Length: 418
Image (cartoon, rainbow, N blue to C red; front, top):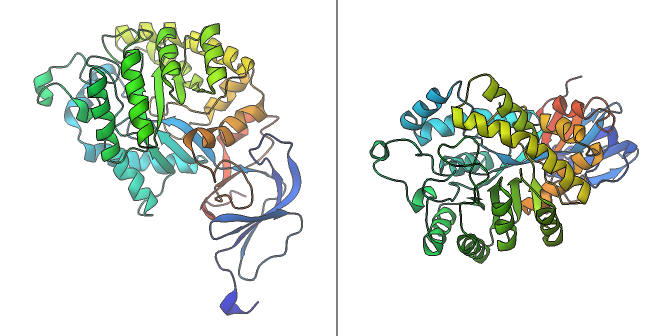
């Protein structure tokens, strides 16, 4: 090949132990050739294209770039409840976007090349678009903009605060709506301003004030209206849902995923399995909020809810996974530090999930949930989002917490650490 036709954009990764994200057995001594940001060829002893960059992995494990289906890139846990309240009244979308940019890079370097951000402000749309345009570094973002919920519910960030501080109660523009017609309007507004997915609060939450974590909030009629309106625009719906009744209402309405799913009973598990509803379990964050409760970092009512919900969340996940409910990896990063996303893996495995299934949850399954047809597996034609780790994650899942190389769109963003 002449210098004029040399492929300077090609990348050849040699001698990998490949876990391809499909759930199949690892392959050893594999080469992966990347061209134009996509996987061109997988095999052994592949020829090196002229001008291609070559990285010898030395038998290290190569996986698809990891996907976190439940993040909050604009957020970070405040040192105390009081400081969290101060942020609510002092910070603007500009502050959130700048913080999110730092969190996005940290997340990418941790091996998560794609995330679904399930509820923040319109700043997440700006962050998504800046990353897509290549202006800043970060994971691909599937963005929800504002989450949708009832007045005084988990999605209402003004709970317990003077409404006049915010110029009056929030309305559909911030995702707060009551009744089927108003929630349709809220969905349309989020989509109008760039939402890729719709996030709803079907039940109360742990860190919100004045609501019970397990209490149903959106009514069945409201949930049906939301799912219908989202479907008209080709959008999926993710439902924050801790309580059993709210989980069932959301599944019946046709949501695509249940986030947290803390109080699952046998009927809810059977419904999810029958409908193909994903569970995004976020079990690591349960331990984090228990520690925050014990350390005095939460309001008293949130601390009590944390101690009640967290152990039940772990039990629900273990039973759902054992029953064959589809699991997609998600963490709730933002409640704990961004970049620690991979700590979710070890909790999933500790609760009985096989390491190979935990990896599938963060690759093929998460890509399926997010509707990303060319991500989540190492296959010819797929986008070359890849992560390399030292060691064998099937023997020690914690090695995923320490990526040695991260490739996004065929370009190394964390250079080889060897």
